[in-house]
Image (cartoon, rainbow, N blue to C red; front, side, top):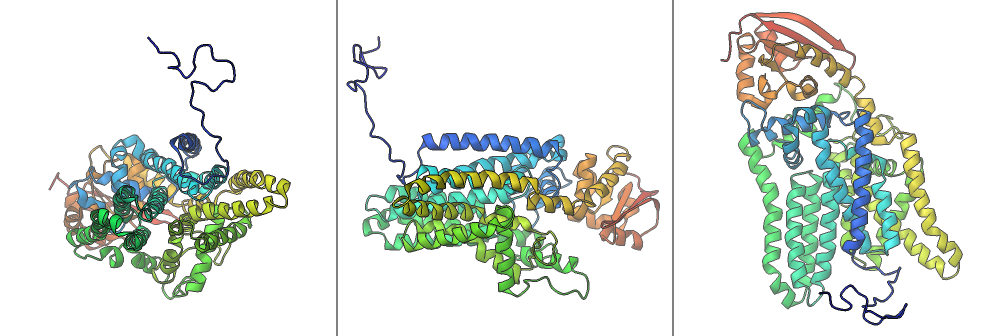
Length: 563
């Protein structure tokens, strides 16, 4: 039997009486405290709704596979199990493996591989996690209302919403970046408290796991992870002896885990590629790609060996990625002012880790052979515009922080004006969403421009590949046009391709005896093989497209079965 008051009400209590129940003090709307689960639940629900809407739009309009890199990421994930020699050796040595491992459970379903859904599922989950992380970090610096404004600016960014429906790595990295900063802020705060050893230990272990994940997601994660370790090291060294002793093992664990990621990747490159720096100087590295795609005798891109120009290109790209028209300048200025105030006030300085991508990309553009082109700057083209998305969390949180501080100062002498600042900020977020969608977000526009010839070309190649009898061995270089096999729905283990280097290299020495169908693109390795060993091959089709070169199909008259 229920006891009186078990449901929070005592029988016979007069209306309005507080007797028999717990009365919580009214919550200060200006309080800056850690986010509660009750706060995070609606944020997560809103992020889920936005993710579903983004997926519906992207899927219905065929936008998920516009990026060639998205197609390539899916291809790498697919070949881990779908290849002549399946295994971790199929991960490759340049792109880091975590995104492909996350796609692995989904990409083995042929329909999801072909549609791009295999890459969308993990990206959408990462989008939701990143939105929650953005709000949680903002609550350490702002009251609930302004944390909501900062999170809304981040979550409603059309470029981010689009990328979250693709196999691109930005959503995953942003989720890891935001949560790394969250646990670093909380860990540093705990280390400064005499009774914070338990919290500090847990945050160090979590930071280690997140750093390990970042190291295997993007190379900027290597730098972020190193700075996270440095921040923890300084805070741990400055903590009181009792806390330092109690958290020593956790700090050692953080150190070892932070080192383990890069060392493991060095070993992987050495073991599978024969060069521990293959990702940096191999045939698929950024330097090699830049050399391959640059016309002979052409000048280097603007920003090459020029940190001033690279700073301009990257910050301008971040602005255009974040805000419509020229409002990105105001957003950038507000964020810089916010960062300066956080540093000056000693207010969770660890949150400044959000700015680490800025020097990383300035260096990458200047000395890492990583060009960025946007239509607002010469040569008015589209390339790598998505890299500016790494700055979106910093612009959202520090920009909102500046407006919040301004609102508090104005409140003292113009309370009515101050009362309008939050609604105006939220209105700007809404207008920003509408205007960016109307003009097509930069990241999406780049994908559309750069896929204009690739997708029709691969569609035509796929139509020809479908005509081959089921199970026909195909000699083909999948480095550039794996999308043709994807569209055709041909299992990768049916091909002799660079993913299985031993089989591929043997086939190049005797193409007619190794495969029933041989397909070359331009002057690739297969084309050179056909030129050197034409015996037994009959050219059956030549297909050329502007901007993509020619695909040549050959029938083998010598193939007699599996060699």
